[in-house]
Length: 286
Image (tube, rainbow, N blue to C red; front, side):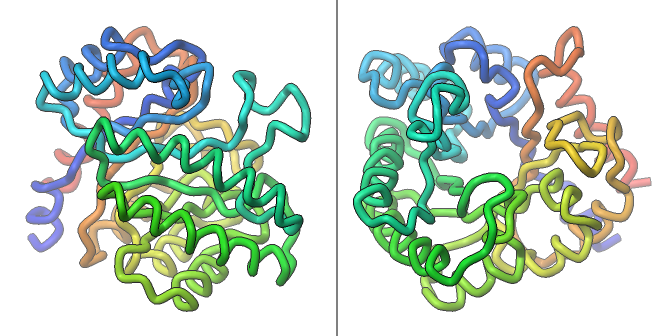
């Protein structure tokens, strides 16, 4: 019965990652709202949301001002270019750059995205620690501490809290994220638990349990255990019954956010996402 009470309040949310190849505007947000979602995460990839384009930000701000949907979070940029970093290594944005001028450049780029919160109130900003497959080094962890300290203050001044995400690399394992959080001791610094990334490192349940006390939001998606496919839950190799059970047992207050690949292959992926939440709730209540 305990889990039913929590699930009754399951905060359902959708990331615009589903439309990453399209320019984000009111038509996409209207679809999300019409399906029933009241919380959304915007993915800051410049081909989708160009956070340096005042007009696009103002259009989105006007849409949010006129709708019940809240901007729950923004996913901070991983690349400077409009093509997922394909223009070359210089387009990568990483807070773990050991070279200080490059690290300052990366932090400045991320600050430009955080400025969205000046126009659209936003609760959280999701930050990667390092890039995919990056190897561990103490110097990189020190660089991450420096970057997070600067970005956290910049975000706080705009009413937003930083959430660190577990990504497929040696720097942002649950252990290392806990180390970062412990070193900093900022009560507003939390985690975003990414189920798909946890699966690539093994079983998501122990990863969830290590991160749960500081989890404020999630990225829910599935994969084969090897590739970061961002499939709908149930289309990959995650044991969702086991993961849900662990998530429902957690005492914390967190958002259930689907972060699905574009294109998902579904005729209407937004409605499919809403229906998936309906099924999850029915199952938990049964």
